[in-house]
Length: 397
Image 1: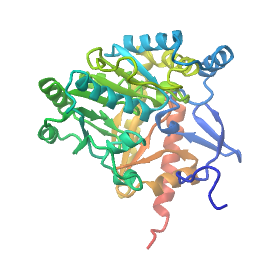
Image 2: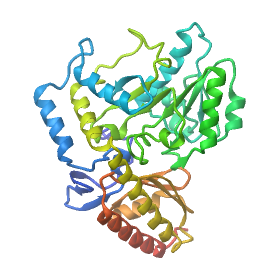
Image 3: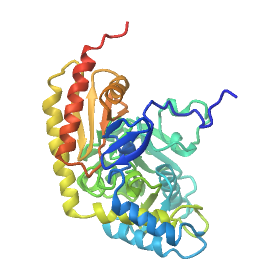
């Protein structure tokens, strides 16, 4: 047998973590890594957070899973907290970000088709977005690398350039149900939408009775210094998909919606065996206990400003390698003048610094939100050493 026991869909590197300590990962060989990837914006409380672990342990001992045929006091409580913290009136819990986006797509279509407008099924989406790996969510993206091997795509999506309001307006047609957009593209390279773009989408949605759907799977849950990124734009969506950080490492996602937007999501229209299970709800509660307050969010903004300031000051030392820094809070991207994967691998393998490559020649810097100045110092020391040694490496012919 030549195939590996784990289906070989990931080009896994040599880092093999077996333990985590706050903002560090420890490999099976004892190597210690500074984790400024956070499971791609998931481990926002770092590793081995006592409050999160305790909540999961207590709930595991009490009740892990029951069918959604029964009442869910755990789900009701967490849903109410999210409603109180956001624009939403109602919540559907999922197990992942892709499932949350799937629910958001269904909610947007159901809004129209519940009223008899069965022809309104098409979502306008934006190039270089990443919405997940299910058939619907890869169809919502224009990235051919995710399409290969899975054609034909599902119909119902129209691609427009990101931050192109006139393009979005021109794409509206008789079948349009709404817009699906990341306020800050993560996989696409930590690219912020302009306020004018999101404000314009909101105005178009209102004018044409369309759903404005935000994918905040990566940029949500305190990552950018507000509970959700939409707050910084002053633009309120109708539907929002969230996941990653909301469980702090435990698999949980959610689709949030206004009462009006969710009018089509009635009995029997959607479901999930594991979505909203008591164990996941306990993890979500523990995360909100820590991050959903003004003091914590202000601290994220302050740390993000310090880290960004140091990065901007540093990159001028290597003008042939670095271009500029962008992002918000502790969702930062350093754009390189080369393809970033070799540099990410160099930092990882030679300086024990974990970052994440992204589109548009960008290195994502996504530390746990609980870093302190010592971790910023360690990060800058490793990045400086990595840039210096990378610059000395011979260029392949």
